[in-house]
Image (cartoon, rainbow, N blue to C red; front, top):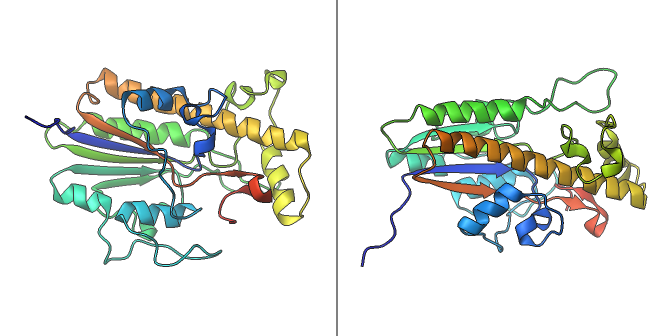
Length: 276
């Protein structure tokens, strides 16, 4: 008997710091991820996929090469794609695929070798330049949609060769605050209010650097806006895939949704990632 027909194209969408424990179809009680859940129902959900490192660089080096890391994660460890390491994009390229990568994470950058194997690789920072009167760099909300537009335009232009496209979005990575109505989606009492763009970062900063425990209300606030950020990026993915579907580019395409690592929300007494 004939086996299944393999998809002609492949798109990998990485959602940075998306914690599996906050994804609806994996058991989270809130409806944070309807697009991801719908794809899981149509395809395969890998419940036992483990990041090899709790930071972007180490994890991305690992899954881009299919290798375990050469050393356990330690604070300040440096990870790059060495010249002796064959990357996923290089394998696609050698097999005749057109390849393109789009990154919103400043660490997934050509300086670390992450453009190897991609005929096109674009980086658009998710953070605005530092302002003297601000403790934290504000998020550039136009970066993610702009990257998705570039990716869609590149995919639309592919007519002959099969293609592989990698999109690395810096969502729901902190700062968690997202555009209305998503930032207050799980805080109905705040609907219509003007959000404080730094409140979640302040709460987490106090815990890490001052050892100040968050109050129950502060912890719930951080969880709520994190969940809202997941729902926001889930919507961006839905719009992106809908655009590709409308031009017939998903009919023969494998869609992979993944994350580089999870996120701590005071499990074991810590916030964020890269600290355990």
